[in-house]
Image 1: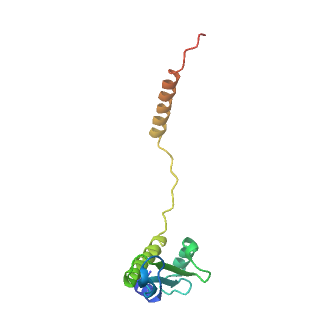
Image 2 (image 1 turned 180 degrees about the vertical axis):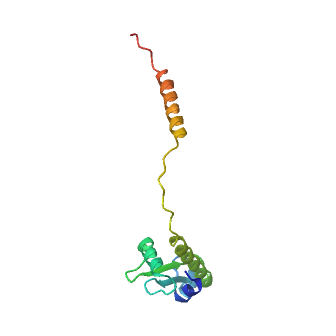
Image 3 (image 1 turned 60 degrees about the vertical axis):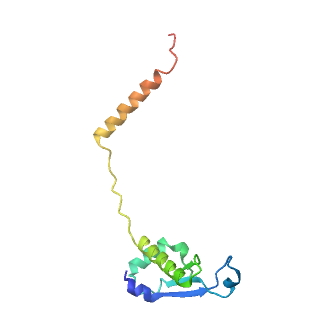
Amino acid sequence: MNKENIFKEVHFKASRSSGAGGQHVNKVSSRVELYFDLEHSTALSENEKQLLKQKVASKLTKENCLIISCETTRSQHRNKEIALQKFLKLIADNLIRPKKRRPTKPSRASVQKSSETKQRNAVKKALRKKPTLD
């Protein structure tokens, strides 16, 4: 993943933010939407594209375009920074491949310790019962 090339492929669109804000909200486009075309990206390899398509499938459009919007602050520039941070975090987090799990067996000592603990608990609970008259 090459960050400089990714920045070149990201497009921004500003629109009016929803919510409270008085008359000012009707004049200023502070909401920012970040668009990234995953299908035609040259910054990512084919393997990275496939991995991202699988992991962020719910966030992609039909044309495999990733859209991230931000309207948390009243500043368009700050919203742009936040959207870019979200995008980079999303890409970085989803390009990490988890290590394959190697199945392991419990050690002989841990198996023995577990069975001894079970025996002690069984005896402890057996002593709580009322004695029989047999």
